[in-house]
Amino acid sequence: MHGHDLSYLCAALLPRGTSLPKATMMAIVAAMSNPWTTDDIPDQTGKRAIVTGANSGIGWHTALELARAGAEVTIASRDTGKANVATERIRAALPSARVRTGVLDLARLASVRAFVEAELTDARPIDLLVNNAGVMALPERRVSPDGHELQFATNVLGPFVLTGLLMPRILEAGAPRVVTVSSYAHTQGGPTPIEDLESERAYRPVRAYSKTKLANILFTRELQRRTGDRLLAVTCHPGASRTNLSADTSRPMKLITWTMGPMLQSAAAGAEPTLRAATAPDAKPGAYYGPGGLFRLRGPAVEAETAPFAHDAVAARRLWSELERISGVVYPIP
Image (tube, rainbow, N blue to C red; front, side):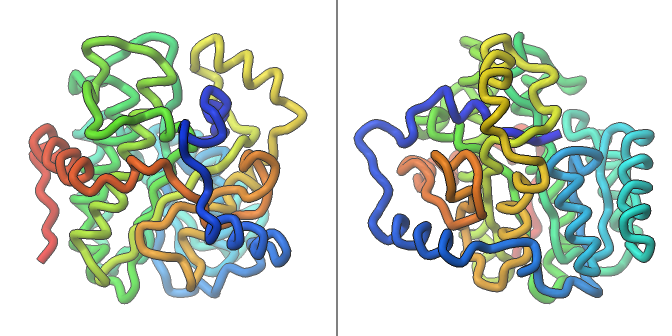
């Protein structure tokens, strides 16, 4: 479900008053001269991976390349039919692929728990969880079956619960990773701490989405802080890519999608930051990866810079506590 990051265009290239650090600029230049590609993915044989929202778009290409590298991949999707089609497409391209499906609707906490229960029947460790699924800038405020604002439920609360409930199996892996797909739109999600998480006081489609994407980064960095060197937590953004994410979004976002058509990169290219975050041996704890080319909308995956408030450790702890309160899920981290 997660795809092109066109809400990026609703913001300036950087938050007002900030600029890319010199070290980041040098890293981008170096990366562009020797770009990372999917050919750089190390052998994933023997690893068990779960990718949410992998029935199409960026998630599907993430699952495809992980399977190509030898991982066993679970395509987690709320639509069983679409998940089965996605699995067969991978098997058609890679007859030896080890890929299966699981029913997961992140907006329904009962569905999250049922998915986790099924996954935990497998005693093997989970080496990689990719929190990819998401919805963007819904035209009006909607609520999930559990009564939560739908973007918050799908993009933030569901992944928090999923990751927490899977954590026992994740921590059993030798070098586990949790990758959460964010967005450049996070730059419009501040200031921190994030207020009105569920947009009850006021609902603006892009603003609501931006807050969830900032929450994704804060969650990632707090997860890294709590797990230390036991786990690698990384985040990323896909730039502007051709996916179906704008099928159910506000009119301004649809207009942006239409006008940006020639500049959009493929969903396969949009998956590269996720794949780099998920597999690169040099991926950094709490880091943020995204396209390094034209306006950071497209191009090879590089380490990118987040808005300054996405480094707010106090806000990250406050968000974590609020998600624990809402969900009742406490992570089993020693």
